[in-house]
Length: 186
Image (cartoon, rainbow, N blue to C red; front, top):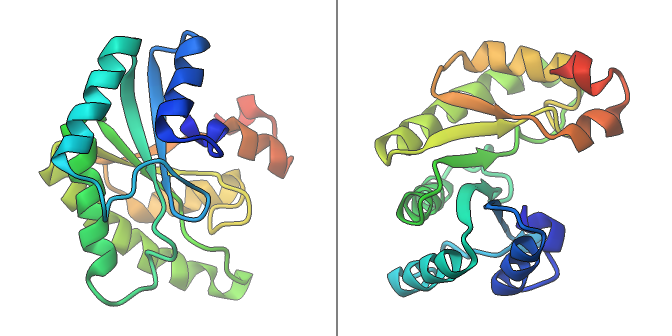
């Protein structure tokens, strides 16, 4: 993932990935943390340049890792349209998956209500992704989020209940939580 090289430019990160002989890469679209693609400024020319760079380095894009701040609690349409732009970019550059975080952590008493609302929004995002030829994936478990551990992640996916939504299983977050082994988590 270019998240590993978040302090570099996208082209610098791709050079590092290529040097390690990976043939696929996940690109970070996380403003304030790792925004290797800025969906608000990205143009068709940027897509063409990226595709040319990938061809030279013999790398394909597996996914875009998209977090647009608190996408889940905003009520205006901007987060949905920005997500749609990200998914269009993903489709254009050959990424078959758009990964999103599970949503912010909440108090235990608010978990069920919040998780139901987020599951509904995830299904809406799945509609957008599906319509553009991509698969939506939720990164879970993810430390300090609504799906902090394996149990919460499993409960969230039960509520999402949509075959178009996959799970991006980040082993670093399973290890960080420490409640079960990676093998148990899988």
